[in-house]
Image: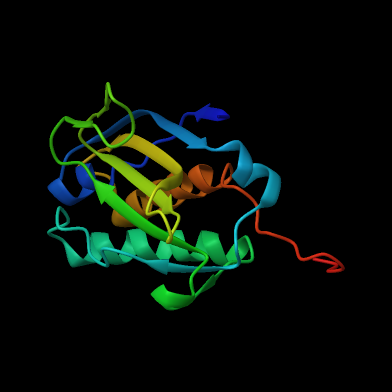
Length: 171
C-alpha cells in the first residue's frame, strides 16, 4: 500500500470551537495500489450527509463546499448514492481521538483534525483517506480562517487518486 505524508493546517474544529491559529498545517493521506493503477470512477456521492460532530452549520457548509470544489477541479461529478463509483464522508475531531477503523493499533487525531474518506460502495471499505490538522487563532479574521481551511483541503486533495480514464478518451 502506498502511503503519502504531507503537512497542512486546517483546524476546522478549532475554528468552530473558537480556538486559535498557529503552527504548520499537517496532512497525511493513504491509498491502495489498485486505486492508483486504475483510477476512480467519475461519480461520487456523500454518505453520512452531515457529520454529527459538527454543531455549526457554517463550518459544515464550508467543509462540504470546499471538498466538492476540489473534486470538481479533478473532473469528478456528484451523483446519487446508487450510481456512485465511490462514496465520500468526512469527520471532524473535537477531542483527542483514536481512529480504530484505520488499523488495529488506531491512529490518534488531535483536536481540529479533518478526516476525509473515500469508500468503495460495494465493500464499504476505505479506499483512500486524508487527514488535515491545524489551529486557527480566535482573533484571525473570518476570511483568513476560510482561506486556511480551503488551503488545507486543497493540499489534501493534491494526493487524491486520479479519475479513471476510459480507453480511447482524450481526457
